[in-house]
Amino acid sequence: MTENPSLSALLARIDPITLDEMESITLMNRIDSKYLTDFPTLLRLLGDAAEQGYRALYVDGKKLIPYDSVYFDTPDLKTYTDHRNRKLVRQKVRTRCYLTDSGAAFLEIKRKTNHGRTKKKRMQIPMADFADFRGNAGAAEYLKNRSMFTAEQLSPELHTRFSRITLVNAHQTERITIDLDLHFENVRFGTQASLPGAVVIELKQDGRAPSRMKPILLKNRIKPFRISKYCTAVTLTDPTARYGRFKLKLKRISRVIGCPLYPAASPFNETHTSSSNELINE
Image (cartoon, rainbow, N blue to C red; front, top):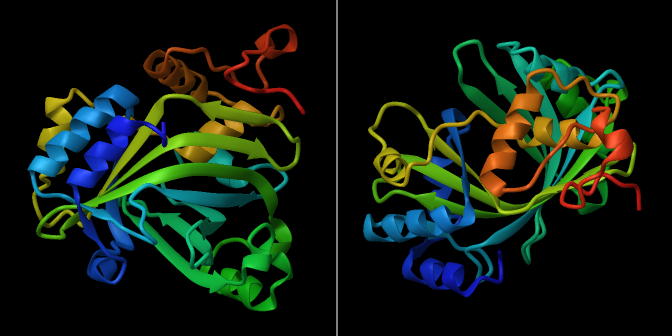
């Protein structure tokens, strides 16, 4: 999808915004709304966004920016299980690398509050610690002081790769991230999965200003869908993960992308493996 000429043409119509200009809208304390759609619908959305004056983050000559993340969890998958069980207050710990010329890497702690807000804290770390930050004493101390976890309790669980478009409205009161080309690899088991054709949209706002994006989403019949890339990927790649209600979410995603997805722990995978799901150790 990243090589699609229609996508390139649409992105060329959207005015750029730099990282420095976006500093005032980091929205580290925010309300998130998530949506799921397919690639053809994304193209229509981008056309509408261009007409409404949205700007796209522009880094190192690119508006479609590759991201690389490693998620950390406990041996019993506490961060995954808390989300699956709808625990209101929960955390996720990850490292993230922005695959640009700057090559910056961060340790990030995301905390969901019981008021439905998402708070994120992060510190920059050396690129050498991206795959596993636990040997970095400063990063371990940062985690200990700001998280319910210590570095000793965690280990790498999941490696995710995707490409992202980030849109900002003219008044800079909201940010929209659009993730596509999603690929996952389970660090513990080596299993892989992808979501071909899926587009995950996240609307991030502080709640004090009306959204210009919501009417565009409604016009294109893009409905809200609570989706966690991490939890979806764990369900698809970790055979020890109890999937529960996430099985229904996989069915919804399957309908959108037009190919079947199955939990790694599902008995179906013992005798049937979807090539699109890539649940095979290579």
